[in-house]
Image (cartoon, rainbow, N blue to C red):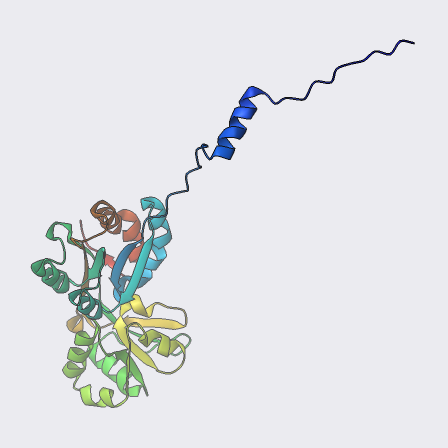
Length: 267
């Protein structure tokens, strides 16, 4: 049988594959771009008075606006001191007088100013404790005199109303002797933990697990605290800060305010 000799041709790559390989080896291939980093979050400085509402609506707010928030809560006075000292922020929620002072100093934009909500001062007790009457000045006086420890903030928007009310009832010294002065927003927690019998603070701060609202201060002793927002002239993004302000004054935020005993301001 005759032997058939076949020439074996070397295997070759398609031209386009060779070209791609050469580009890769030579470093001429186009690099895949890295994803752009997330933009820095908007910095919101907010009074404790609206904290429950802000925390409740924050996830939906971030999703709707397509941005992240970095929120710091404290008393309005403490936050104002930080801003005066140069603390950067994008939007602040303080009281009207403090926001107006920032506008005067050029540290907040006048055209961005917006009243968000108001809230009164109330009295809270540990959940499950007998519901004492606070509906009239005399009833509130008896309730405060019967308590062993009464908590209220050392510094905060409710303090002036509390001091004025105690003076009006003629029991300022008696209550001061058994008072527990707390840090920002800590009074209700002291009641929930059994460290105090009563707390006097903003109603929106009282509504936490373990604490029941006995009621607001009597009408003749009541003082409403208004919370006002504005953006910084040095905001990282004026458009984003303005979008946040629009959301804070919108229907979703209004519903969250109502759910946490805050009264949205008419707009």
